[in-house]
Image 1: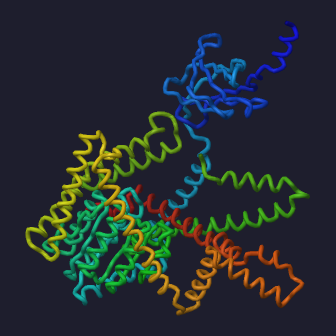
Image 2 (image 1 turned 90 degrees about the horizontal axis):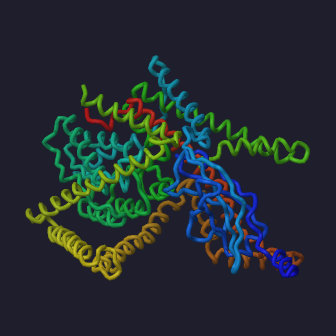
Image 3 (image 1 turned 180 degrees about the vertical axis):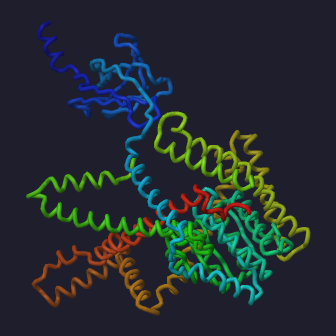
Length: 381
Length: 234
């Protein structure tokens, strides 16, 4: 009997060890992190987690399925903030199970500050302060210079050419929603184009993929026509909804281009794979084309197919460029200064990182400092 | 006066609230962003009625006025309402239009998906015509673009590897001391492609990305502080 007991003890399942329970950091509460270790987790069927509000009370399983890992985030909807909880982990083999010691108490709490986003807060404050400094400088009358943006200069030429040819103008926001910054940035451009088209009495067609954008476009063009003193020319039938389907939209707009044969086309907004289908169709009808998008993967297609392309943040600068008020230009100046600052920081870090790698054997702390800096700049969870 | 100041105040208040909520996980801030997005999704769901109104009005007017291509407009309106009817029937009969045996699913699988695929497939031809124009040697920039594009293409296709094997054999023929197996392993075109994509292309992409991020912040600040008002009615 004693021998059997010794044998069973020798082959008994080892229980999970080092069970650690803690409140999940930087969250809105109702979450507890549980970690544990096991000398041979691969030999098991899995683990099951049990929870109770008392160390000696009834432990109920948190997850019905067996877990094949040694960590778990308990986000059960029954979990309450401010209540002390106790956990135990049970390991299961084919014909045995073994429970860990009870871990706890642990209390879930919501945090008032997400510490993992401290880097974002610091950088936001610095960047915002620099922007505000340049806005204030501009308010004091400091002269600001803005470089030529050929894409924006070409707007009037394109409109003039369409007028001379007696052809309509087409403007598209692509598949952008009103929540996309680039669509908001394109609205002033639509206003400018709308005003000019009203002055030249040229038809402006705006096919849309989103009803909210369509409504905003209708209002913008209506205002532009009124501003130009030609509200009679405004026709809401020219600013229509096509479809929200990506290739359905491409087919619809291609059809409009081939039927109406516009003299000038403006692709300003959010575009995906349909960008080249649209721009190449525009090219086949001989329209002068101007594009601008923040979707960098589509920029090469527009560069290849269009006459002018606004690259990067140029489309964001459009409203400042077209209406160069000092305060508006102040933000562009601030943007340029921050860009210079970032180039300087990146250059310094490149040299520092290279030196840290080269001198790693003699001064290992350099590598540690470099990695700490890089980690600080890495995106938060 | 209030027509402009009230929207500006709403923009300022909402923006500040969402910025604060980004850093505070505690209720009621923590789930504010998702709550706002839910509101947006609900509102945008209703605005599809506006889209439907615009689409049907536009095409019905074309049909009534017998404008050029009115027959296609008629087809569009009929297809729209046929899809709606089939969708509603599927919903009632199969409790979801996307049930596998539902007629709406048949419509989706055998009409909408092939049409989408056909449109997507035309991209191949458009890439060819656009590439022809972009790669024409007009100046130094276009020449560099052509060389880089050819190298990247060779590095991506089996033909590049095959050409490199022939080059390796030629090198081995001229310099018999070189080891042919080692020359094969170099895969020069693939290495050049990797370098072009990982260094100059990534550097340019990140440069544009940083510019876009800063431009976005500047634009946001202009909107939040009420400097940028071009999106508002005058």
